[in-house]
Length: 248
Image 1 (cartoon, rainbow, N blue to C red):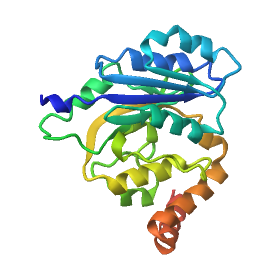
Image 2: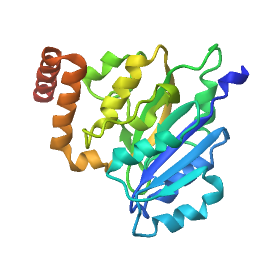
Image 3: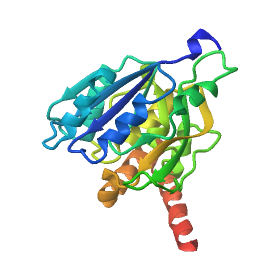
Image 4: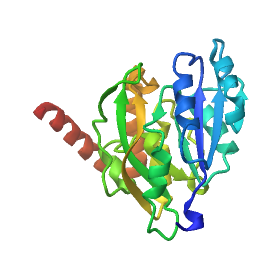
């Protein structure tokens, strides 16, 4: 394999009062068989046992910050500023890399490429609080992806989307619930090459922030789509979403 096709992954975990879930997330990263990993943990000044749990693994964590922040995406921006890897990926408390060799298999899927792609992505499994498989994510990652693809919704889960760090902008803090949707589109608008791995990359805990604030999140997504794709295209896509829901 080309030397330059052994990328360094900056995996960033953002958490706050996550004592029930943080350990599984950390273990899924530090048990990877692929070792070119920079692990960054950003804790929002937890008041439970989260920090004690994290500190048990301090020798395996490249960078740990624990301080108040003004929300999820502010914390994620801190992680981005600290990252030095070829790729950045966010794996929040409760989410896990799918298998111990997920990163190894991901890198293996790059064999035959002459340079690192701008985005590497794959599928996502939904799991319950015990980590048991529930089902695959309803929106499946397509084999061909471009920035226009997200007109049809967030086809790739944010946790299964690895972006070249040099292309990764800061998260837009005007969006409180769906800034990751906007961020992925902005990354893809700059990307020349998007590589589909054909792998399940992430086990996603299906009780996210967005689920709790569904309506506000959907309103934000509409604004983001209107900004990137124009009002008419966004209205037409939403008409199709409604029709699809009715036909179901």
